[in-house]
Length: 127
Image (tube, rainbow, N blue to C red):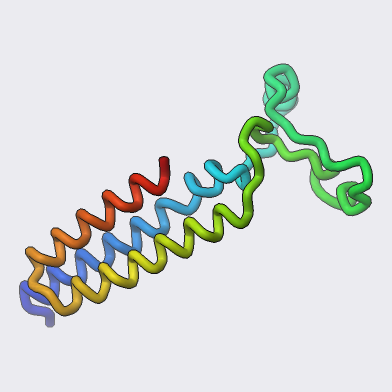
């Protein structure tokens, strides 16, 4: 059984993990790595009408083996940036490791303050 301090620290560590998890999809969207294939004819027509798709390069021979022949149903204005995504994920992981260490060694109140700084850092990175 955990005492109150241990429980408070575990709760904060769980919040750090949840924050890491909750940033993945929005980060993928931000860096053009996330799209949703249409699940009906109406969604397909809407995506085409709104020009919310990116066709594969003409020389992409692998596209014929992918679902939708390599068409990505996403906003073409958002440039696909795999390196930007990886860099952002790395920054979040490094910050999470730092705040996790602080939560582990500091008091719960100080750990909460560190967690709030982490949340603020992640929020700024997501913009």
